Image (cartoon, rainbow, N blue to C red; front, side, top):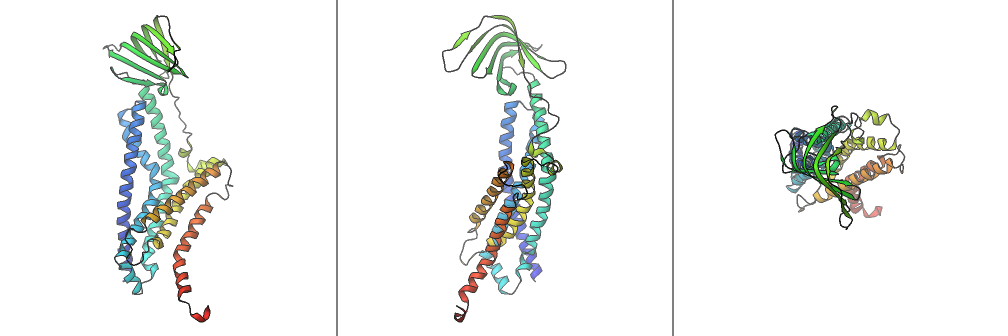
Length: 365
């Protein structure tokens, strides 16, 4: 009988977890799509890389969603069972709590193992791949031909080029170029221009013909007209091709293990913390979902959200402290996990202790 109830509770928890993860993934997907499309529009990404960057971005942030999704899924599922008196009836019939909740704890351990593989192996590789693709897409976008009637940003947004029309041979007609050099803005108008790429493909330039330049500081009267020119070449700086990804999030876990740098050790501690958080929150969610009679099934959802936010902020603050040397690497983030474990122990055993104190015999007072 107990095993049947255990499987029933596990099925309810898995169903609630899938629903919560689905909602969180939709929110994450919306944010990723908006961020990637904004970056793609600004840097002229090729269309083929947008979906790949969205997919890799989801892999990077999936490790953050699994713990909170599991916590909310357990609290929602067990909250419904407590609200409908199903768990109260099972416990009153003598079914052991270990039998009822063993499957839920096992689910947390399995998800933590998968999360460890994700945060330690998959996510760093996805970040490195996303950075490589992004660098290549920026360079490809910079080398893409201009489109007539549209403004095009170059050199990280410090130069903007506009052409009214483009001839079949690629010659730009009625060209506008704006370049920012610190506080100084240079505006160039030319009758025609040609966009050329160096033979090695590492740089490009725009050759302007029959035009005039203006330069000055926006918002002030310090503008002056430069002499007309017959030909002017404007070089366009391109981002360097980085074959080695140096972003800390993209470093392999093995490289972090071999380094004594506090920033790398802080990142390593964060990656290890995600699967540990998954297990600790699973254990904490079981007593946290316990409801009193006549409480609503969603009564403790807000409390679960607060616990997760405090836990996540402790880990983020601890990571920053380790990176800046405020906390020794040996201590790491274990203090944050210990604090939440103590909270879980208090939530589990405090009701029983209070009940013993309330109903102890008068002679023992």
